[in-house]
Length: 183
Image (cartoon, rainbow, N blue to C red):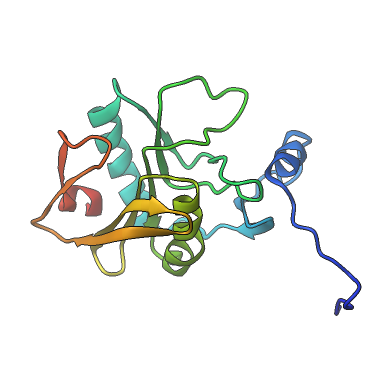
């Protein structure tokens, strides 16, 4: 169905999407809100699931006393977005009433979602002032870290492969082997 020039399509606000979810809409669907649109999330393959399991153990053990590590939970981004990244490292707090809107680090494990993770999500997280965004790039067997956020972009991008070490911006005293992120 085509829309006429007089029709205006209004994006769904994050608070409206949360209300729909609270009413039971979208049960058993893997979805997230990006730029006011309901977006189906990619199915989780074995490599993706294995990387998420490995990273959960790694990040929780390293950061448990310093921050909360949330896996595949919504992140209250801008007014029209509520992505569900594979990981958010957020200030330790009670998030029972609202999803976190600040993060030290957001990590997406990318297999089939690489174009979305680099395309739609990278500028979104930068616009939310997330200081560091990581993409565990499974097809290319590397970790991409984007730092120094500014509205809509990151000023620095680095690629890490097996044999290299990764330090996180918010936790510079911790060092991880890139191979730990890649399993």
